Length: 132
Image (tube, rainbow, N blue to C red):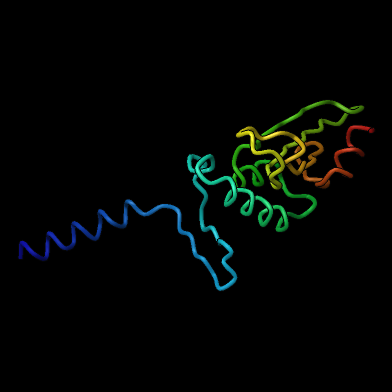
């Protein structure tokens, strides 16, 4: 009886401690069931790969709250008003450029939201939103 209770207790403990599940497929690509932001600084290459994959799955019209829930906090964020429209630009690191330990804007992909809805991503969308 004690062994059964102990085994059951161990199973419950293991289940409660499970977190991020990473599966490496045949192409050595990572699939994330969940991403823990605290590990982002530990392996920036995996985080970039995750960001690129997550951005490919976005759709115009996605709500900013849903995107941030999936992707976490952006590396950079700009907010401004254009006419009567609130524009938010979230930048996520997607391409390594400098081995200086600091993420710069040229290493990120901008996601452009107008009034809380995704209207585009990439530098062309950013230039259009900012009038550059």
